Length: 592
Image (cartoon, rainbow, N blue to C red):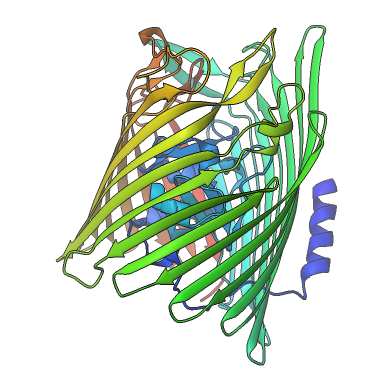
């Protein structure tokens, strides 16, 4: 009931506002970067409507996810970097949490993902104000086309999702809304060490609401977005003891408003996230309640060869564990010097210090084989948790710095498209939580780390048949330490697979489509000393989906068999993923 009241308030308050429409010239760096695009099948189009970004991005070999179970908190990393070193961009605003540095991707609806959403490697430092490696660009179009869809997603491990998408226009104002509610008992069978078990105590429920409008007045355009989420996650993985359940409650509201005229755009963004974590073990009752606030004003001006962006941010974190607030200002300017050369300069003001970063980009996009080379230096500012967490925060932390270079090439011919990329990144002062005196842990600028990633994607399409082969190989090594013992020098970072691959075959004929997708996830270390006893073995699993259209495409049904061969899957020790299970998705649309 509380959630329905909030939604009613949002609908009545923002029904007269408008959605962002970026028609500025694309002289910015992210518009020029060469990379592999998401190749979407009929089954993928259904998944975009009913799944989270985390569930959908499993299909992308560049993306490594870390989670306890379906629906649990999910973080990610690109190319061996940490989740906090990547940016989450929502309509031009970096919404990566200033408190934790990450966004829970299980709460990000996949409907916000575009085909060019994933920006991997060191070149992604150009996209956000605080990123080193990797970015995810989010946005939802409001074309003005009239539509009404009813969505249903269910499975045999206790899941049920119901949603609607509504779009159209009134006058010259376009709108689109998305409302989706999902819950699951998340009780599933799995195989561990050759034995069959049954997982319980991992239930969750969540609600997502998106509202977008866009309009114009004379020579200017005005816009707004509203994004509300509410979630409860029950996890058998208590931080005090694995068999004991815990509860994480998360509620967030994000709003932005943009005004744009010819070459200039002004965006105002505000968000609040509230979290409560409860963990009980006998006489110990741990409850941690915190709030995260962000206020951002962004000014953007785009001329023929120069793009300038200024972000003025105010971050605040309060609650049980810390009470802190910080302003930050970031200046970015991209200059296109010639058809092949461009550069980016980034200056950040944070805690009364200025941090510079710069990047150079060379490309020959107009040639038969487009090639792009980038090189630069970027930084990642410490989060409020790392600086001020009580107890254990370290106010003396310095930003992580990086040097990176990336080479990308692509070739298209007669239905084939091949994209290759090699990325090398050196990170100085990697922040790591370390044990201090007693039982207190605190973050330190400890490691000097080298990250190397090679990616290849081959796509083929002809007469309804499609094949996408993607492989991502990464190498991570600690080169040195700035403090403490050097025992970890030469070791790989934790939970980074050395190899990840995804193969998709799909065939569509008439009203039917069939998809076969196989995943390979390489072995990962779970102990800092890389001892073999803490290594998770490589995993291989396959999903099969059948899509069928009815009633002239107004009803589309999709059925999927997940983990067809009942393979062992374990993202974290003691928390195996499901064995074989089944799901059904339905989309009912109004008449075209």
